[in-house]
Length: 111
Image (cartoon, rainbow, N blue to C red):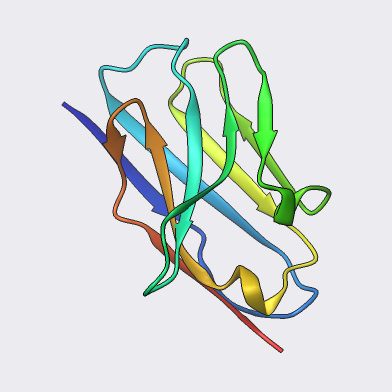
């Protein structure tokens, strides 16, 4: 069993920053890709960023240059540094490893 717990969400004004964290417990492997997703009610969940076991990184076009994903080598911790936040970044953010998901942390960006 693998458990993921996100933290670090909150409310911030546009232009501000937040740092999301995801703590992973249970049996995981360093080769697993770890990802951040976000979801807004009424819209499809979208992948924000991912980082593979080899360090390969990908970002959604809308967050390139503003968000930075990082992880530890043991796949026990995942982070998302979010800078220059915009109101359209408002969403529930989830971390995912393999087929496992956390319960999410809410990010709200006010104009």
